[in-house]
Length: 244
Image 1 (cartoon, rainbow, N blue to C red):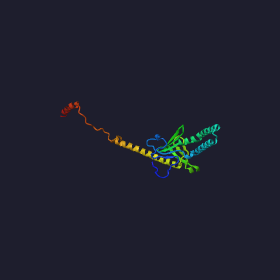
Image 2 (tube, rainbow, N blue to C red):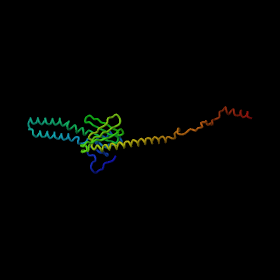
Image 3 (cartoon, rainbow, N blue to C red):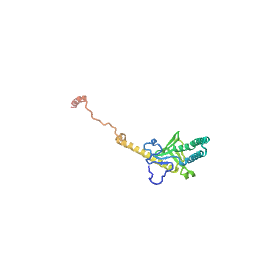
Image 4 (cartoon, helix red, strand yellow):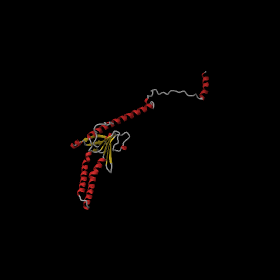
């Protein structure tokens, strides 16, 4: 796997972790022995900009209410009401979108593409590179400005296609997946050729195959010498006298 240069700007700054033996946010205990994480992606960070701004405005409103309300019983009630409204509104409008962004992983490895989603209830999908038939990306005008886009992954079999939204630098990720697919196919071909070569070598080491030699056309039995029986030895002098 190619390593990124030590100097210069980070080529994957927007929600991307480029691994070169470094620890990533995704748990690597789910990987196979020879599997390497190429990219650990979150959706583009701009997906949480609006909830963040909204949360800041809610907090500013609560602070303003606390400043302008009098420090008495009525004022304290208004402040408590403002805090309750802040919590009730902020949890679904600010906290949930942020946790959803943080717990969404698009992991691209040397063997597969893994998708993990969910805050409390987790769900995931693994697409092996050998089953991917097509990878395409789509960018709107806004996506091109923020260097984002959507990926559409088609796979063989009955499983539905996977749509990955708000992928940072989706065009480069598409090229990466295509390159990994080619490398995986080449690795499988080499592995298959190596297995056939090992089988041939094992067959050669076991010795010549009897069936590989042609049998002679003459199938006449060749007489073999055997020990003389005692009866034949007794009959031999008698046959000699008759000949004389």
